[in-house]
Amino acid sequence: MTRGRDKETIKKRDPGIDLIRVIACLLVIGIHVDVMGTGDNSKLLIRLLLSDGVTLFFILSGFFFFKKGFADTLKRTLRGIVFPGVLVMLLSYQFAPFIRHEQSAFYCLTHINFDICMFITDLLSWGGSIRENLAGHLWYIFTYLELVLAYPLLKPLYTYSVNNGNSNVDKNMLYAGDKYCRYRWFIIGFIFINQIIMDLNMTGLISLFPVQISPFMLYTAPAMLLMIGAEIGHLKQLIKSKSRKIGIIALIVCVMTFIARFFMQKLVFSYNQSQDFYLYWNCAFATVQSTAFVVMIMCMDLRENRIVNFIARAGRYTFYIYLLHYGLYYMFYYRYEPDWSFGLIDMTGGYDTMAKELMHILVRVSTVFIMSLVLSFLIVKITEYLKRAKQEISSK
Image (cartoon, rainbow, N blue to C red; front, side, top):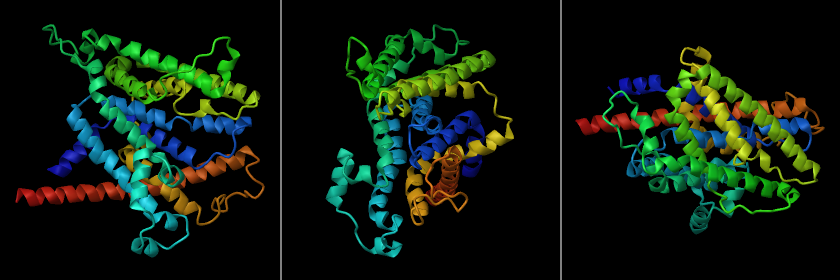
């Protein structure tokens, strides 16, 4: 029975959402395998294409964030996200000498390679060795936990209660008239304006204006992205009903935002500033571009597309891929040379051509993704087997 339910759940998964998950995962891996340089046009273009994986993940989280109550959301977050993340951090501390090819795996199994008090200190303060070792990318987990802890503040914005006796009305659309829901777009807009001001400050472009304002909301972008995801999720049927028109508009917005972002970053570099904030996931351009991209994918009918459905099946494993890919990348590549690429291209002259840069990205992203996917698949299957075994034992 459990297997049947699992298969039924998999069939009901939206291939569009899972496709976005896979794309976001590939983008995150791409950023972590190091694009060499930022200054010239080709490398700037590559970095822009790889910038917004985290933005997409936050928007997708908003699709489901307000579906359940606070207690259940917190419990699932701790059990399914935070605890596995902490475990990976702990293992990265313990096995860092092996991953970096400094000690054998047996040595790491038989020796404690870190101070537990230091680990707890780094974990609670998110500093020290965590930022420097193979778990630095897992900041996302604790940012998500902070959003979950803010759930009681955000939930009223997406709670509906009025049906007006009309059974034909989609109750997901009725929250708009409730007491607090009417303010949700004001909050999104306010955060977005502060995001723009933050961008101008971080890139130094605000110095071009006669009046300079420093933003006072620096860490609210993830909450805004969750809210945007919730809006898209609630408007899913409307988007589907006008998919052709909305899809074209979303494509135009996505392309135009990408072009504007490219030239704005060029402008920053032209002022001899090394700040590349317009390439970050939490800049205002990333918000607009990623939102348009998600809406564009939602407008596509992908359920009968075999290629998309095949690729989207990996969407089920993207969280574990996110956890594991950084350690696997270092363990696999840094046992050879930092520029090793299976001998497919000569990197001895540096990354002086776009072909070399693309080879560096394509080889590493694909191999790290496949290795992480295989290991994630095994973890999920073993976990499912243990759950079934536990249920069978308890039923007896």
